[in-house]
Structures are given as C-alpha cells and as structure tokens.
Figure (tube, one colour):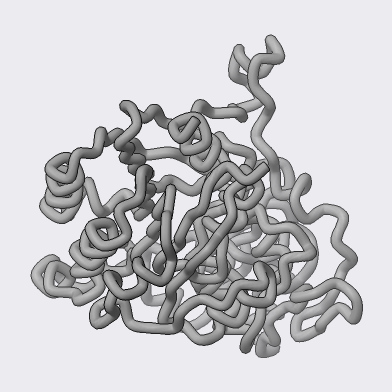
Length: 350
C-alpha cells in the first residue's frame, strides 16, 4: 500500500528518499544540481531527478506537472551553516547556500504539501538562528504546525554519531518527533529490553572482506579504498589498532603539517570496532580528513564501508568518480533516520 506521494528537493544521492520508500511512500519527483548524485538517484529509484539549480528553478510549473504531493522533503546543502566551515562569521552569513532556506520555502508555497520535512546541521540553530527562525515563522504563517529538535542518528539504528536538526511541519495535526529506537548499551532501557543497543562499526562493516589501499573489490560495489602515498601508509601502520590516534605513533612519522599544528586530533585516527563511528563528512574515505582509518586494516575506509556506516544497504550503488561518491555519502541523510521521520509522516497523513 502506498502511504502517499512525496517529493525530495536537494535530493542528493537519495538517503532521504530511501527512508521514505521503506516507510511506504512513493517518490514522484526529485531535484538536485549535482550530476553524479542525479545519476546515483536514478540508478537506485528508477526516477530521474530534475537536474537544476534550485535558485532559478520554476517550482510553480513543476508543481502543476507533479499533481498532488503529500510530503515535501528537503535537506538544503549545509556547508554554509556547518562548524566545519572555517570562514569568518560575516563570510558564512553571506554564503549563497544559506539562501537555500528561502528557496525551500518557495518550493513549499508552490507545491503545497500536507507535511513538510526539513533537515540540516546543528549550526543552523546554534549559530545561524535567524535563518531557522525565519523558516519556522514562515511555515506557521502558511498554516503548518511545526515541531523540531536535534536528533542523533545513532539513536535510530545508524552506526554513527551524527546530530542533525529535524523539522516536521503538518497541516493535519501537531507533529511529534520520532522516538529513539536505540541507546547506549549501558542505558537502563537497553538492559530492560525497551530499546536496542547502539549499532557499532563492527556491526556495520565487520563482515566485509579485507582490501588494501587503492584496491577495488571485484564483487562488492563501491568497496574501494583510496590510494595512499607511502609516507601516509607508514604512519597508518604505526597507529595502534582499534581506536588508535596518530599521536600514538612516533612523531617522526607524522606529516610535517601535524608537527607544527595543534588540534584536529582525529585526523589519521582509527575507528573503534565496538563503538559507533564518528560523524562522516564528505571526506569520509580520506584519512587526512578525520578519524577515517579502518579499525584494523592499514588503509582508509572504503566507499562501501562509508555507505554502510550511513545506513545504506549494499544493493544501493553509487555512481561517479570516487571523490564524488564520498561527497554523496557524506552529504546524505542516513536512511534509517529518514525512515523514522517518514513513519511520523505516515501517522500524520492517516
């Protein structure tokens, strides 16, 4: 049974769409400006997104072509709001990507969905509250009841700590955020069987066959690890297995830039087998971008391992060059979290 029709704008590779499909919704439209993300989306959902810049796109014309839309999902690019953006506050405030909040509202007005879902990084409420306040006020003026909160994907069956702002707006009734399904293994609710324990790195990638840096597995799609220079490999070999840091290795093996710089301690760090992963970024397969070294093997994470840590199944195949695939994975809303939100939409529409 189809629970309703939905549209995904700023759709990327389709993390949000996969979650909504799992909950019973049917996608009837998607939009994104990244050509490789569009290819990935089409390959996995047999629906070709509109490849366009949302700033100049005619949402009213598109709405007439789409017909009735029950849910509009949108995850505008978050780089302008992210704490990883090292530009000054004034520069970040003028980042044109931040205007996509206004474009999102333009889409809501044109498409007229019954339920609206918006996702972004914590920075949109912590440091850039004026954009988020504008979004909430505008939705209320349109007749929506609005609720929002900061949810951690690890509490919804994703083997990764990943905090995101989730907003749900409804014209049906006041929405509620999805209840967590997972918790810290030491939590009383887990011990009493009320919640499941967090998924770990081992749960997610422990069964994948080993590969070397620069090697591509012949059968498992996207199980490909980034080629690394020999000085990087010497450093990685010296980092203790299962959670070690580059600072645990002899200092003479550190890269010159790390000997002069304090901070970024996670760079060239290994993940721990029995803990959830750190937050994956668009550089998730590159050890120089964060704690993205395999817990045991002497290499960075493969693209398939990154996808699994985001909650994508192995039959979800990513298209494009490796760097683009890493970006698609790092930008995605984890499908299990999207599914939890979609289940709220199901109840609202019923």
